[in-house]
Length: 219
Image (cartoon, rainbow, N blue to C red; front, top):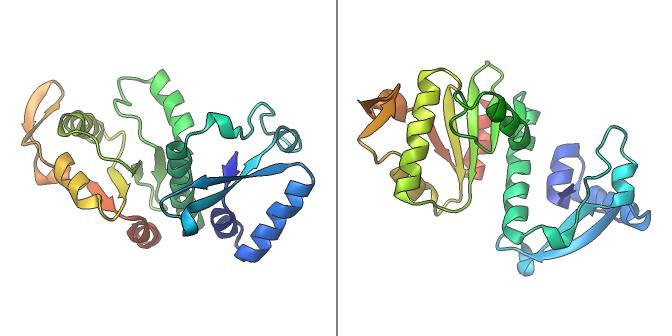
């Protein structure tokens, strides 16, 4: 229900100027609104968010008309996470990945909770058919929380629900996130304590957004 000029131009394969002019035209028609937010990655401390209005949502064939952008109901943290997920998804789609959003993954997990012990931000299948859990990690969790996550993902790897986990992190947080997740010596698999060995550890991939864009082309 919202995006930026940068993400839209990347997705549509047009220039940023053309993307901006398109948003301005849609704004005049009442289909989108402009919402400027403070954002650490934006120039001059502001990020221009273009959000779908109620009128805009009704104009899209097949779109749920109840879904639209309400600035009062979306936090800055949620916006930043969504925009970074959008960018990661766009690069994946452009090189032939199949992307399943977190909403659809939650539905899978609800139907098969024993298989989906951990619900990632997305599930993406590479052009070669490998099913990868995608995590957009903007803030670090505690070591205890990461131990639980590592256990869950190792069980999912063992059962071949997924073939790998990709953490897309901020540059300054990547090493710390990697260290925490790979720190346990043991993990529970099938109710038994096992060594957290290199076979499992090698399935966890840690990248910043620029590295992800390179990796996506040749996973």
